Length: 189
Image (cartoon, rainbow, N blue to C red; front, side, top):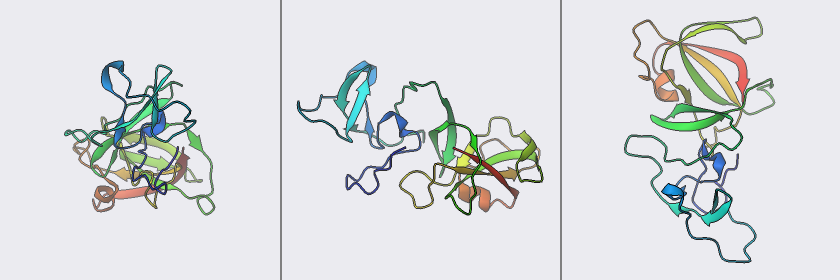
């Protein structure tokens, strides 16, 4: 994942911008390409590729009026995609699996899973859980933020029966909810 925060362009990549479309840029709909870059230009952070043809990004809305991220991504490697909440907005992320890291040596970001029950083993890894049906996980950060890391530490927010799915939509919501938070030693990239 690339972060353009320091590039001076003023654009930032989103969690889901793995398809080469920075936040604020989006390939045209309906398969039509944006204008091609000038001949002889070898590389650019403004390019998108649609069906093997190159074009340059155009500014567009970062989020739809519904709060969903305005993202175009064709998932060329058939990786697991997921919807997650970040700061009350739905964004998209790739789930590439669990990894073992030492959080004392590797920077990690925080991910919250909303559950009715959770049990961790003696190493702090997930033994069992009962997830809230329909609830999306929650990220505390996205690329460009100081807290961001592509490595996520799972925190389980234990909610009572009757909790309405997706009532919690931000890390702040979780931390201020008063619900028990079980911090694991489970990490995902």
